[in-house]
Image (cartoon, helix red, strand yellow):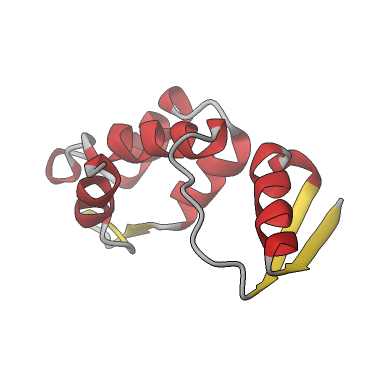
Length: 111
């Protein structure tokens, strides 16, 4: 496991390396890396599919346990599944996301 860092073009290389080796990278530190279009990386496409899958989960009809079961059944990657579970809030009689999943899904659809 490693944390990668870089400056300028090195920041872009560190980020691209981390995206393509998520199972081996714990973090990325970048300085003046500039914009990088992530949409064409496999990891981004995987996350995008999980965001849209989770956004289709009707929380108004779900309790916490059924929502967790949905995540277990529909998110293959253990790391991403854990992140989505951490952002699922059990409110007793209802469940809701701790993040704005609707806007995230809309933002990821825009190309």
